[in-house]
Image 1 (cartoon, rainbow, N blue to C red):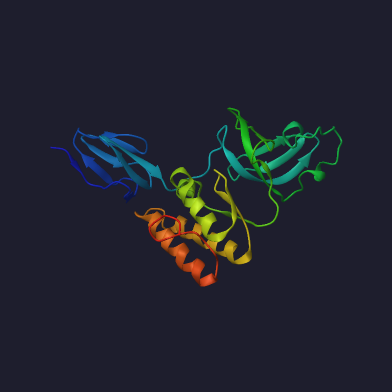
Image 2 (image 1 turned 90 degrees about the horizontal axis):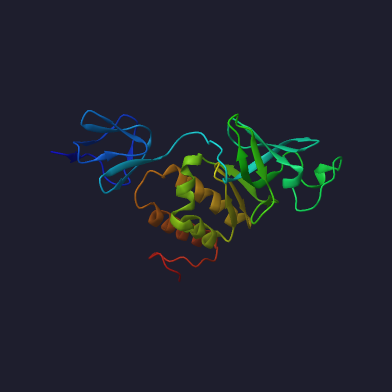
Amino acid sequence: MSELFVKDREAVAPGEKLAEGMDYIPAKGAYRLGESIYAQELGLVQIDGRAIKLVPLSGAYVPKREDVIIVKIIDITMSGWRVDTRSAYSGMIGLRDGSSDFIAKGADLTRYFRIGDYVVAKITNVTSQMLIDLSAVGPGLKRLRGGQVIEVGCKKVPRVIGKKGSMVSMIKDATGCMITVGQNGRIWVNGEPKGQILAVETIKKIVKEAHTSGLTDKIRSYLIGRADELGLEHSLSADGGEE
């Protein structure tokens, strides 16, 4: 007889037994050994019918084509800007991908990006040798001005964003901040001082409690309480709707 030892959205550690019997099928992050299914990594259990998979909660960022990430300019060359992708591999924004303007060779590239600048960029290509090309031209792609950049584990990014953007939208509504979340775990927050402080506090709380159930309701209550304490106007209500 088959038996399930975990609940949906439960946090599990590597090697933890998830199920017994052949009625369940291991999916991403889980594996079968004999008639038992075990966790392959630290993550949240996701049960979909007979399939058991894990949403990882730890691990380094691995660059992928089409990812939108926040990069840091670390060098300027004749052909463009070298960037820190917050992975084991740096990337390049070429002259054609740095601006919608025509940039002539030999131009002063610091007019566009300086060393230390943060930029929202899209990965356009990743070669088998992990050479990474990025573009800063397109909707939402830009140099970030003002505010602050914080870093979280890239595996926690889906929890910060929430289902269909619900979590990050809730933070924006409560704090009045502009927030950009990069898939590499860098997050830009810009707003009035009190709102910015609350937004950063909330993101850190989400990351710390990412493994817990009912997280959206917990964060909503936290935002309402802290926003009221700080005197921030917001449209959040305890039932999840707008006031």
